[in-house]
Image 1 (cartoon, rainbow, N blue to C red):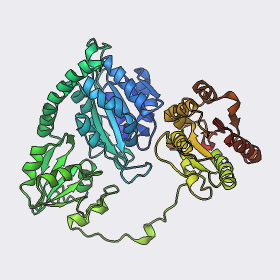
Image 2: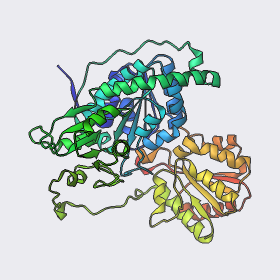
Image 3: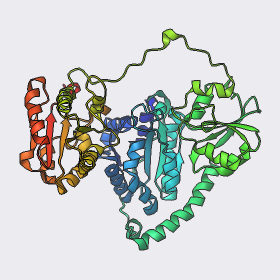
Image 4: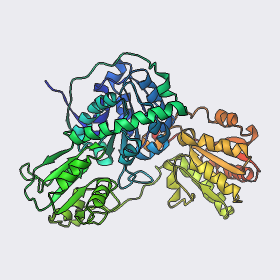
Length: 522
């Protein structure tokens, strides 16, 4: 009997990787991808098979570990959110040049509408840039099926394969039919050292091989059943739907028939000939893709006089996620107003009652009132909420690890006092190198590490450096007498504020570690 499970899209991806016989999974937590790794970590099957599964310090180290695992002939999966791929871009792009041995599948969860992110970049462009195959499922069943298939494609072309999902697939559940699991591969380390040693002599040869592969990869996308035509009732309009865009279009089907003929796109690089053949049959086209207008831009360049409905010229917005409601007008369907009684008022996020960051921000806010010319450069985490009332205590939040380096750059420009606020997990993710820069130049900054003993923003995953922050700072070169361990409590506020004032006046690097466990850990 075929096994079925009710799974989140993230969980479907994770189960597919287990069923594909992976030997390891690597990741750094980040919404909306976190549940992929959590599912594998909690899996009894993974435990029985001794699948390696631990959180990495950041996405770059996760990807490099996955590449090393693949080097030994074993299948591996690495997962991250879209901005995490920015961090992992160096090994990711270069792994297309080295190639892989055991199947290596990269799962990237994009976040259109920025539900929990700094931007809404589209990871399909990374696949095009690196020259590797990309798969984009439309629903949870395809998330499972495509991930299984991705390992086969990876080994066929000896290249990593990117599977792109979005928030609405990652975080919604559906009934998923599973396929019989595959046994893991045998340990067999690579013997072709020239492939993985990217000195110019080897890199040039490897890049030429990658260039030759690209035509085969493109031909495979052209012939793939993942890119297929589907009949529809009214041929006055043609629809090209990618990924979850097709899932939303299906909601308007009548007795299984789509409102208009459709070309479903789920495998990349772009099947350009298939797109041309379909597009030439229609005077106007509607392009549904949840993210940037990758397909639409290609069609606009290919057919500058054809009427294209989509994100570039409307009626769809160029920003935000695709939804069934947003595509209704483009399908000439009634867009009835929802009953206002079902519309909940927006509620801004806030720190949990009892959060240790609240007491830290009380100190920072009072410090800035005493020093109005000062600035607090913050980072990615729960403490980003210090920007909102009642604290209004931070001035920047750009990317993981930017707090320390931005504080350094501002201090180099003459800003004083210059504070950096960073969490314990973010510090070990990408803050340590910035601190090394500051120590090297004895920059006049004060770094506040808000240590709540966990990676709280994504649900409480292990913060792998939480027990060694003082040692790390000493090892980087911060003077021991300017490393202080504080307890963020209301009763300690005066003491903590006094120390912050003193250290901000020190002409060099100071580190204050404000340590109290996240309230959710109790």
